[in-house]
Image (cartoon, rainbow, N blue to C red; front, side, top):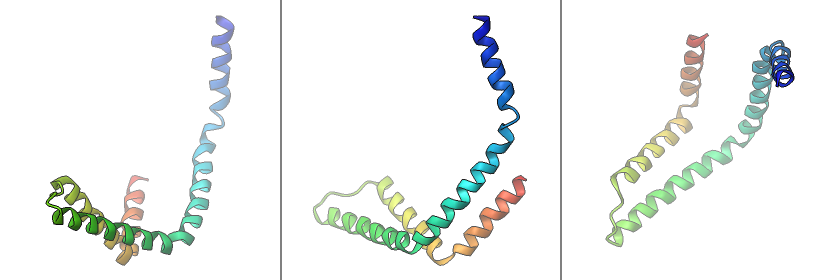
Length: 106
């Protein structure tokens, strides 16, 4: 029992010198991922617009069949449309807001 506790303690002690490296590894992974997603941005924006349009079509179609969509689903659809609109037409404003928020936490 003592040997297993000692082994666990030594693992924690040995990893304490490596733990400060984890944020750097995460940042490198995030940078690589963002470069990949930046190439896909036009396709993702088109897909977002198409899916929002499909949601509005389904909502309109439900009204035609006397099936009224719920308030929460209608609210989420409009909120999603607003978010997609903001991200399409104001990407630099969003980037500045995120940068200011992250700079404020440092």
